[in-house]
Length: 295
Image (cartoon, rainbow, N blue to C red; front, side):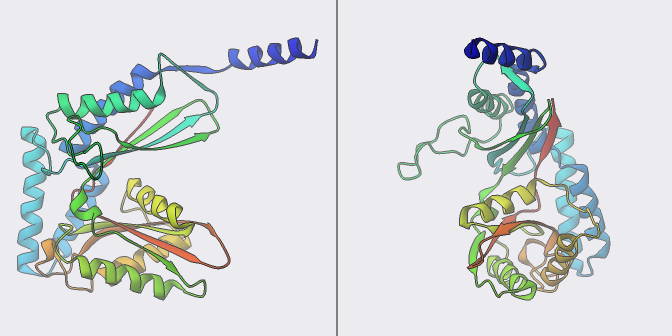
């Protein structure tokens, strides 16, 4: 009797769930991979335009102008913004009231990335084994971060991440007595030591707190957020302090000097252990790409 009641309750709950066919996820991720690699998002264009006006170095202004021209050509001629079309990083938020139909979510994400890169004629840069180094041929597998949230929607963020800048990223397990000045110093040292390697002006994602691995996730997640957003939060104030410090380094566009070393900084924080202060810095290039949709 108890078993019958339980099954009945499950059935009643399922009746209220919203069905989403995974083929819609495949279609959207395919289109997002192509879109993100050919068109820089509106928020990125706005900080680009602001930097071009504020840059005082003649060479810096010239370089920023050339980068803007490259963006225009990429969009008009459907040529990727950068030859490194990145490793696809996909953030998924799936509502707990969603019932996915038609197949596996993991397979759907892989198919979407595969079709986006092969049918979009994007460079495939992923090797199936980090030591044997054989290319998979379709830029899969992507890195997938899945979160179950309240609601009946599926939110997708696709962030093609180039690895010239990824290789410049760092993480530190700082002393718990460290403060904002110590964090800023570590970030500035990271960006200065990178020089022109990450193709500045950069966008910097910073993760503070959590554990060793979670701080790195936070830094990556920060790069998926829109840039140019200012509010009254402590994180926003810290972002502005970091950006000001970075643009005083003189690294400049493409590492050739100037005022625009970084276009923006996004900070994500999370509770952490009393014995540590993890800080991760994820460096991204001037072609920081992200696309977002909701199903």
